[in-house]
Length: 266
Image (cartoon, rainbow, N blue to C red):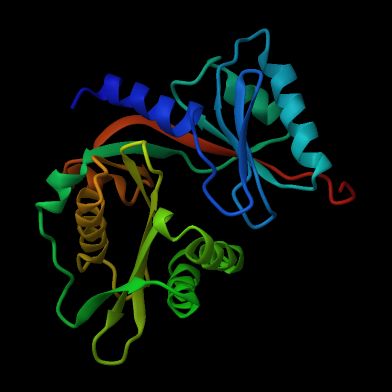
């Protein structure tokens, strides 16, 4: 893999030329910023920017005004290779809060699919195709990450119903009693060649048994069969070493900068 070339391809196809990732969303380019605006339970935020030291502050203020007028919380998805170099400092000065930094990692889907990692004994992988399956995923999300997955549930149910070809979701359940113990999803954007791996989580008590690797390999097989050449992951510190051992290459890092409009606005 040519990391620099693949990173440029990722920036172009997945950021500068991004398509909406959910029902009711729109992507638009305003000046040197590409942003997505959608319903409250969708992802709202800045996907890409081509700013300079002279234009950054005005562009930041413009995005704050846009999303605040709609009463939306939003995220500025900042990559380490974005310009200007002090963009993160400028976002913090404007009232954004930085989240945990993650690694942008990419791998060839056929290579990962060939690893053939099976789930551990006593567990089976079940495709998620309806609201009942999404609820199982939500249960895993809540237990694995300790956060409220209500908005995620709503978004996934809508996506399965309205844009089924853009989402592949799977939940690992125990064979004995059908309890959900791990889950993950894959976002597909036709024409990009990239399949995004998201939401891989395992409940306490089932970690360290290979479920995460199994879910990665499963989605890689589906991606390869559907003609998506590359897998993309925003990897946490926990998942990054696992993905590196599987053959993923780190291309950059990405940090979410979150902005919450004043409660009295919108």
